[in-house]
Amino acid sequence: MRHHTVLETWLRGLAIAVIVLFFMFPIFWIVLMSFQTNETILRSPPSMAFVPTISNYEAIFAGRLDSNVASMDIKFLGNLGNSIILSVGSVAVALLLGVPAAYAFARHKFRGSEDIAFTLLSFRFAPPLLVLLPLTTYFQALGIADTYFGLIWVYQLICLPLILWIVRGYFEDIPADIEHAYRTAGHGWFATFRKIALPLAMPGIAAAGLLAFIFAWNNFIFALVLASADKQPVTVGALAFVTASGIQYGQIAAAVVLSIAPTLMLALYAQRYLVEGLSLGAVKG
Image (cartoon, rainbow, N blue to C red; front, side):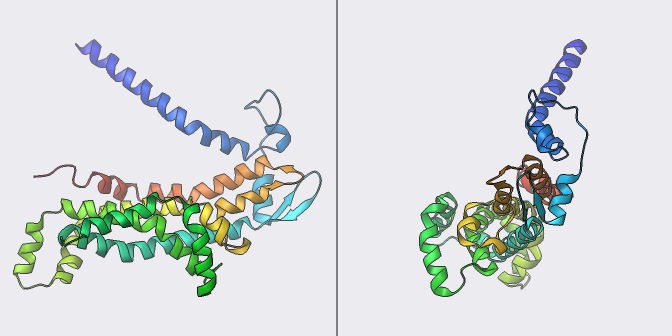
């Protein structure tokens, strides 16, 4: 029996290692590419033996893209700052609007509440191209085209439904008797929400906010159509490395590494809240 247990443990560990290697190898390869020149990357057959260089990162931080044919200015660090502004602003607005709405849908059932909630969720399912043309027209009429405010508002199609539905489930998992006992002591609905429901659901809210941040950070199509070069995030700014003289693979790889670093560090820092939030409500009773 002990032999079977050891064998099962070894096989389980081997399976986990293979799965991790399968999913992490592309990221590992991108990191290696970021320290290579185009000539080294494009050699055939490919090899992991190379002399590392930081020229790709130097070009990004210097804001200068050099190729064999021509040179041009790039604003990737500005794109990185745009991504931070758009993602943080979008998640902040979505939390401000979505958390109270999620509590209302979880605790106050009224006629049409499920229909309204599903309608809000359907915005997440809608193809972005379906709403881009009317949004462009409306934004131009309102004077908010090519502004951070307008882009943050559009990003609510990504963040708000996600936060609303995830946080709603966390509020529903909190026993209503706790809130009822607090209200019996003479406290109002808002005080109950702020002092009881909100602290209990905070791990779930943090997890939903983190997921919304990642989705907002990775968005491409909204910023591509609705923003000019000085408002575009990293997902669109990476197109600058595809030029008429060729594709700068090494600098693209360095840009990818820099663009995933903020979300990776945020996920590592908030992993405790993420684990607690995703497991909230798993054990009832």
